[in-house]
Length: 402
Image 1 (spheres, one colour):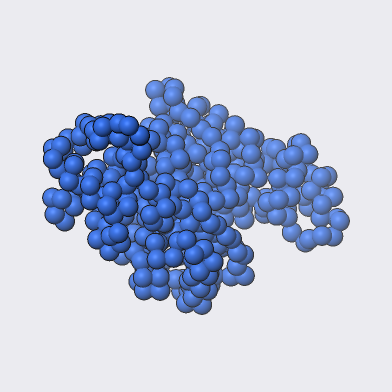
Image 2 (cartoon, helix red, strand yellow; image 1 turned 90 degrees about the horizontal axis):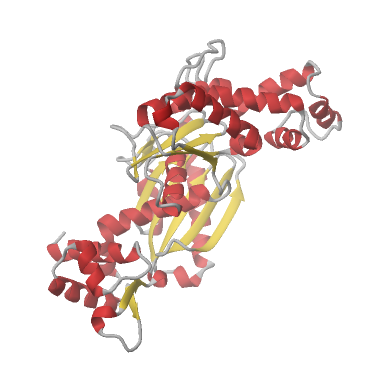
């Protein structure tokens, strides 16, 4: 990358992270020489990546902003039952989105072939983005070797191990591709939408339990990309065997399947008339999270206690993370969080306050995500977006000049 490439990236990123900047303000933000700014801004304007506004003003006072429709990013989130996709412009404004339900994802080749075709169909149905897709970000529901661009030892679906995800999609779409764990892209979505979040933990509570760690506004992945795998931290209930082969993992005692199993056992013992009534109607043989959510809304005392106990289990692990990392925010997401609502949130909050020191919690904000449905796909789009903006923008400018 040349000096001019680096200068152009610095100028473009300074402008896109603001409402609009004059050339003088760009100089103040970047520290670049005014001659360099004049040259590179002229190139960005000529190529259409920047636009300027402000009639009857000198060139020095004209406000520069990015042209949002000059390019687009695709963000996709793969779940065990659902595939969500969004296309966003350079302002991260959503221009298209879709979801489809999946029967199973056990075979990686057939599954990814279907997903690739789904992405291609979405692009084809939106002609304004064709030829202007800068990259694809993809969030996956299992461990990811970020540097290699491959899944690593996924539980439940071992055939996905080492599947060449990045190569598969980059060849199929002919664009740059990044993959990451689903909880990391969910965490990134929160930071992009709320830039004041500096040190944040995003906790996904679902079939699995994971933590996306954002430190100083950057995703922390650890040495090999496995940071945040809190689902396999041992907790006090050592009699429950986890799919990883060990006993007492948080995921085995507080994940979705464990929660539903505990509820079904209690229903069999007559502890919840409300849930018994749902099963007696004959609509289903087993409980689902939507049933627990309905019970919460009906103020069923057993289900409220169930989620309060769930909050204590989760809170015991999160309090340790608070003691180690001292985050400013904890954001809860995932299907279990959505079902448990405020009862789960309050129980987690209270346990953290009880177990962590005052200095670590005096300004700690704990809340539910505001986007249970699309947060992962949006975060994946923003993930590839930041990568392109920071590292490959000069290539985009060269290949799409004019």
